[in-house]
Amino acid sequence: MFHEVGGQINALLRKYLGVGLGVALLVPLALAVAGIAVGLLFPKFEATALLQFPEPQKSLERPGEPRSPEQRPLDPKANVIELAAYKRVAASYDSASQLGAYLEASGLSGRPGAERLLKQAENPGFWDNVAAPVLPFSRRDQKEFGDIKDASATNMLGLELTADARTESVARDAVDVLASYYINAVVRERIRAWTLAGKVDAQSLEKGVRADILRAELDIELYARRAEDMKAILARYPDAARMDSRQVVSVNQAEGGERYLSPLAQLVGAESAISQRRELIRRWQRELKQKAILTQFYTGADDLLYREVDVAKLLAQLKALAAETFAHPESSQEWSQEAALRVNGALDNFEVMRGQFGVRNGIRTGSVASRSPLRLAGLGILAGLALLGAAAFLRTALDAVRSEDGRTPERSERT
Image (cartoon, rainbow, N blue to C red; front, side):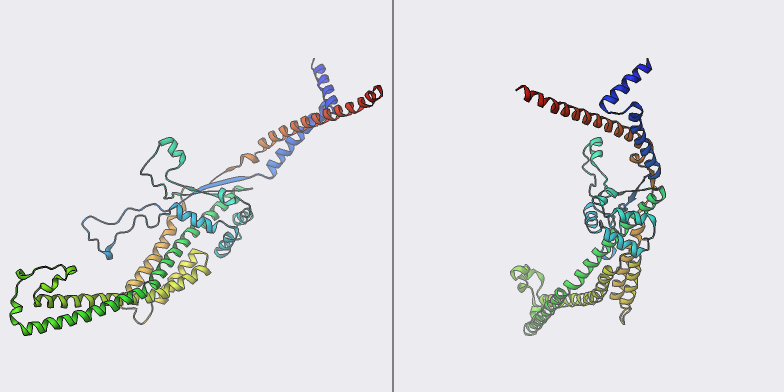
C-alpha cells in the first residue's frame, strides 16, 4: 500500500515538477540544513539593561529652621531628568559622529562593543531601537490601573538599553558602552546649561547693576539736600522739633504725605534713606566684583565645553580653572570666597550626579529568536515547500501556454 501511494506521489511530482520524490524532498531538507548551519555559524545574542536616572531626593529642610536666601534647602528635584531635557540630549547626541568622538575621547574605541556600535550607528533607526525612555506611568500602566492624576509623567526613571552581537560578551559590552555614553551626554548637557546660565547672568546683568548704582547715588544726593533743608527749617523754627506724631495728616508717599510730617521726622527719614541707599550700593558693588570674576570663569568654562567631550576630564579641568580663576589678589575677601564656594559646590554636585546614574540590576542577555537553528530550519523547510509550489505552478502555466499554441494552427486551417 505504501509502495502504491509513494508511486502515485512520485508520478504526480514528475508530472507537475519534472522530478521525483527524492529530489523534491531534497530541496526543503537542503534549505533546513542551510538554516541550521547559518544559526550555528552566525548566532546573535541580545543584551538589555535599565539605565536608572537620578531619583527625587528628600528635602533636607527641618521644621523650625530659618529659610533665608543663604540657607535655602536642597531642591529635591535638582538632578531629576525630565523627558523634554532628554529629548534635547537625544537630538544632539544620537549620531555616529558624536558616538565616535566620545569613544575616542574616553579611550573606549578599542573595545569590541564600541566597534560593534559604531558599525550599527550608521543604520537608520538604530538609535530608536537601542534606547527607549522609561516613564513612571506608561500606556500599559494606564490600561491596567486607569488614569492616575498625580503621576509624574515627565520625570524619567531611566533608559531601556538594547544591543545585539554574535557573542554574549560583546553584546554585554555594547550595553555597557551605551550606558556610559548616555550618562556622559546627559551630565555634559547639564554642565552646558549651568555654564550658559551663569555666563548670561554674569555678563548681561552687569550694566543693569551699574545703572542701579548710579540711580542710588542720585537718590543719596537728593536725600542729602532734603536733610540740609530740614536742618535749616529746624534752625529757623526751633519749636518744630517738638511737633509730635498727632500732627501728621497723611503719610502716603504716593500723595506726597511725607511733607506733612514734622521737619525732625523728615530729617530722620532722609538720613535713614541715605543709609539704606549706601547699603544697597555696597551690595551692588560687591555683586559687580563677583560678576566680573564669574564672567572670567564661565567664559573659560564655555571654551572647555567645546574642546572636551569626556565629562570626567571636563570636570577635572573645570575644577582646575576654578582654582586658577579665584586665585587673585582679593581671594581672601568674603565676596570672592562666596563665589568660589558656589562654583565649586556646583561642580561637586555634577560629580555626585554622575554617580546617581547606573545599571543597578545588571545586564540581561539571551539569544535572538530569529537566529535560532531550529527556527531557521523550520523557515528553510517552509521556503523549500514554497519553492516547489512555485515551480509546479510555473511548469503548469508553461504547459498550458504550449498546448494553447499547438491548437491555434489547427483552428486556422479549419477556418
